[in-house]
Amino acid sequence: MTDNTHDVDTSQSALEDASIELDSVTIQHSDAPNECAMFPRDASDIELMTNWIAAHDDGFVRLESMR
Image 1 (cartoon, helix red, strand yellow):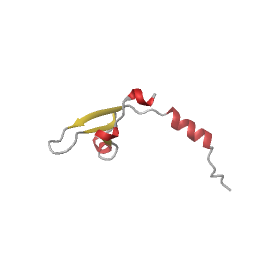
Image 2: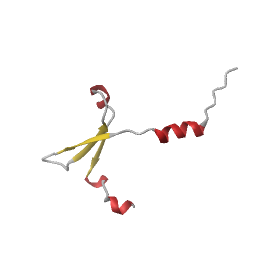
Image 3: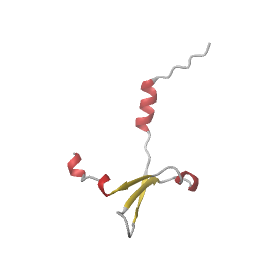
Image 4: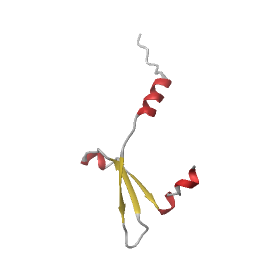
């Protein structure tokens, strides 16, 4: 019989230790608010098609307000 249980603490620890360096680019629109696109720094062209986050004006807060 195979034991398929996972050690949750080990899995969570691995996630906490993982770090991803991001790059960003500002996308300027003449007829809409600008966007900030963030993506993994070492992503391949293929990965960039699906591994990105876009943020709009109201998606940002001042760093000082979160401390």
